[in-house]
Image (cartoon, rainbow, N blue to C red; front, side, top):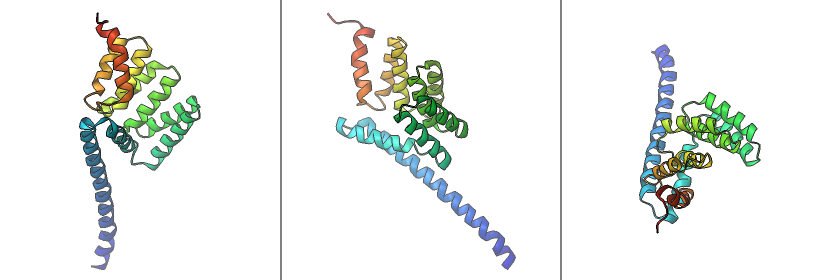
Length: 186
């Protein structure tokens, strides 16, 4: 019995840890789902807090090394070191290809470097991983606007409104583009 107990003890511990990690993942998914539901119906003043909480959830990779790469990339962006940020985010997307936030972050860095093709490609991957990522959709709209495709930009921005009805940049962009896309009212 002693030998069997010694073999089972680590196996039970490993199973318990796996269950706890899985449970935490389910709890995070449930929290994110609740926050997304609340955002859809929130008033303007509450929507910004909810969007920030959602962003914090999206930034949870579940990997210490992925979190470190995301942090280093974000710090490089804040310091205006776009090429360094691209390198960190590239390492992140290589390390954690299923982590949508890595693709969104690298797309943002590519866009700052005016590398719009790679930025659009990264946003495509990000949106395959997380179709509700309103910042990725807004980024898509912003890039389409910069490359002078106002109708496509307007359509992208419109996709944000059912998810985040009070997104300030999207609200402003829709107002700005509506006369261009829909024509001036007489």
